[in-house]
Length: 114
Length: 118
Image (cartoon, rainbow over all chains, first blue to last red; front, side, top):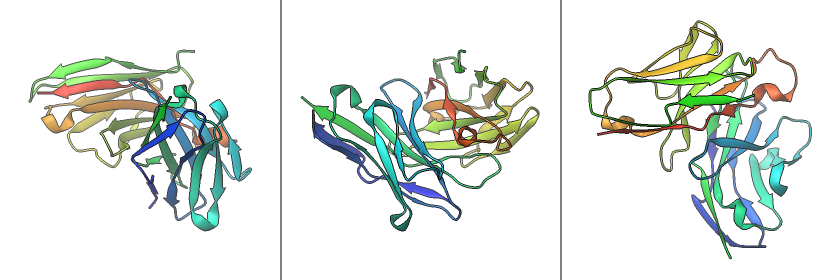
């Protein structure tokens, strides 16, 4: 069985400040890990994914995430927040299952203050 | 490419009514999924399909049925809607696990259907 925990359902940062969104996972097999972003009233858009090629993964819009096996973590960061980053972010894990099924965390809503 | 599309975008039902949500993808993906999104719970898998003519239950299948008669379409049905089914429904698709490369595990999402059951 696999699971994902996102610490903090709401995170607020000032514009220009560091963004750190936390994700911890559990998986019985080497996982594939994803971050998706959801802007208001829209579907989910892939930010980045870890597929065992490199532990530091760069995504769109200046985001990156680091896979740390020893900590079972895949935290999302961005050096400098922009107002347009305000959205909900979901971490997801896919293990070795026949259906490529994803298990999602509960989501973190990022608010950016001017 | 339109990607993944969903119809309708919004719907209001009365308890006991039935409806079908349609998902279509033009990426020739083998796998398709239906999720529901509820506040604080992320997305939960309702049903999925690994190919035309096949379907399987996900985490929260009760009260829903699905069909995959054509590769590009995945239908989600509610036979007798209940207020607990008020949610936002997302469809997604992905490549088959037999596809090589990292893209095979990526799911592509539609814009969602907001359903309210009164």
